[in-house]
Amino acid sequence: MSDASLNDAAKCPVHAPADHPEVKPAKVGVLLANLGTPDSTDYWPMRRYLSEFLSDKRVVDYPSWKWQPLLQLIILSKRPFTSGAAYKSIWNEEADESPLLTITKQQTEAMKASLAKVYGDDVIVDFCMRYGNPSTESKVKEMIAAGCQKILFFPLYPHYAGATSATANDQFFRALMKEKWQPIVRTVEPYFEDAAYIDALAQSIEAAYAKADKKPEILVCSYHGVPQRYLTEGDPYHCQCQKTTRLLKERLGWDDTQIITTFQSKFGPEEWLQPYTVEEVARLAEKGKTNIAVCAPAFSADCIETLEEINEEIKESFEHAGGEHFTYVPCLNNDAAHIDALSGIVQRNLKGWLD
Ligand SMILES: C=CC1=C(C)c2cc3[nH]c(cc4nc(cc5[nH]c(cc1n2)c(C)c5CCC(=O)O)C(CCC(=O)O)=C4C)c(C)c3C=C
Ligand SMILES: [Fe+2]
Ligand SMILES: [Fe+2]
Image (cartoon, rainbow, N blue to C red; front, side):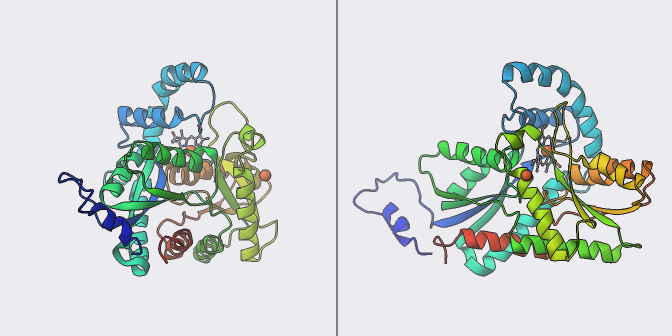
């Protein structure tokens, strides 16, 4: 590690008092971040998680005096039950945790192995969540205690959205506000057009098509939605999603009849980005496209929104409208090509810190 001077400073025999806190050998931290997930499917853990999530002004931007009574008194009296039942249908019973947590742990282990090959033990890799556990603050504290004088913070969202990347970064900076010795930090840019990410997506689609009994007629790229208003107020999420679909189409050598962009998970009465996946798959079936595939490029890991919403609710909407074959293309999760892409992005962002 090139930062020997930082280690030496703490050992200075002239200035260091006898009770000087121990300073560990300097390391670089790579902190992966995802959204977060409930600790269990019961009412109170579900309510705690949803309350933290839906009270975040980056997610729902209504004034608190208007939103909090509606959220606390109406929405959170019912939604923990309905969402809890949805989580139950996909829960990882063996580990007693949600799939998002299981997959994030697997990705972290794979990233540790990949980065250790390049940097040895100069780098510490871990993950945190924006909402719930393990919290961003606890992981920042752990990294600092382990000697990380520099931290690269990586929100695992390919596309920037205020509701995801920005709020993850906000929480990271909030955690840093509490530190006496604040580490040097960098945040990773969105990677919606990264060639290795696009290639990993394309490979996963080719593999799903090769496995399907009958080749799907069209691929629906279903992205998590946000209110339409966020786009007109300056959030680039919509444009980044459109670009991922275009790059994917070009990489696959397809035309516009073979791939489309839709948005899912609408919440509340406002208009969200359109077309809505749940309606579009029904329209496709009604127009005679009875064999379709759906992928979810905005999610780095399978979760409630893919395993339950796409592969149960959206599939049902398609079949109800006359659809026959529905292929869900899983998220990239801990596919080797995905880990290589993420590792490449980290290595680019560590330049100048570790070479
Ligand atoms: C209410 C507004 C919401 C906005 C805006 C929103 C944006 C957004 N979310 C993701 C990724 C994920 N969302 C997940 C769950 C989830 N999302 C919302 C609401 C909004 N999301 C809710 C209420 C929930 C909880 C589940 C439910 O009750 O429906 C998840 C999955 C978490 C898990 O544990 O599996 C992810 C991931 C993105 C990418 C995004 C905007 C770009
Ligand atoms: Fe969401
Ligand atoms: Fe756009």
